[in-house]
Length: 299
Image (cartoon, rainbow, N blue to C red; front, top):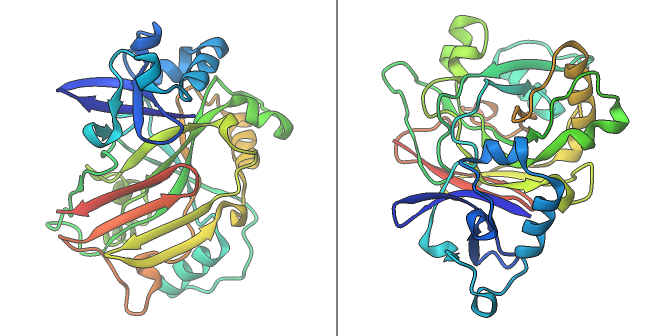
């Protein structure tokens, strides 16, 4: 099941996409008056989610769902527009990306990654899945892209054993962890260079966790101006979702609504010789199997 935040006729709505991908049904049509996606993540009951799953299979012509709209007629927004906390991110969580990152920094890489690398990304407002990414060319000369599978926590998670992680997940979405490499390198850490305004394109939906087998084994790709740049699979993550959530929850409570972006595979701009950084006018498409794609233009 795919849940959307969208706008139609100048009204923002939360809805469920029909299984054929052609329609979106507003949750209010089923008596659910949630103000935003975070309220659904935190408060939707199993019976409500079951109803939405059933409703995604309806034929709008036969059932006359109030407010049903064609996907072609709506503007899709970031599913969680304003995260309540910084997004938790994984650094160098695919081995080939660790290698290309070391090459770019002219460092030796021993082929080992014994501990996960965590950092946070400030997101005042997520960029819509088909919105623009500002180049910040006044301070950035090496703008990069990173397609990632992001996980949304569905209920407060503390001291979660590996075998129970799935029970704490709400769903998945796509994130482009846009990065200013020169800012990262200048400050010797990643927070500022990852957190400039507009650096968190997200969407196009939230795919609920029970929609696909767990753990998810999904193709992950990015395309820049029609050129395939990244092409991998979540199966190649060094630290998987179970490890990430279980480890983090041992030292902190992961609140419902927390977004965790699980790292990017090789093929980012810094990995090429010479590097292929982004410039105004470029189009970046990030694709994750089963979820869909987001496509953003650099301005």
